[in-house]
Length: 86
Image (cartoon, rainbow, N blue to C red; front, side, top):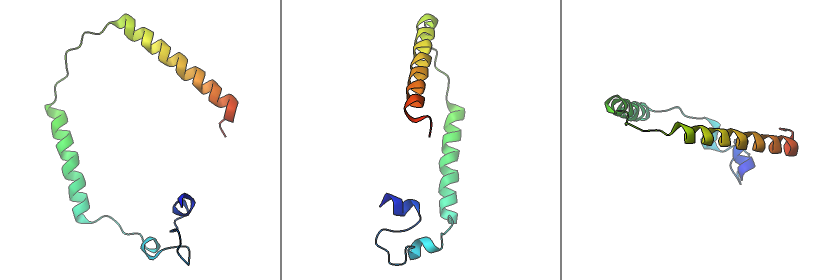
């Protein structure tokens, strides 16, 4: 099923390519209006938002950052040893 979808076919179709996928349709005007309206709402809300006042303990933030980088490095090396990124 997944392979057929990745190849642009539908599972069980006789010719391999369904009629709905033979000629892909573009987006309609209504689709674009909805996209622009949703994007405009997000942009307007972003302009109205205010940054919160946060008191950050920089020692803990630095320790967590170092731990995260160490974990990322360790997992990356383990993945490279296992797969050689192939």
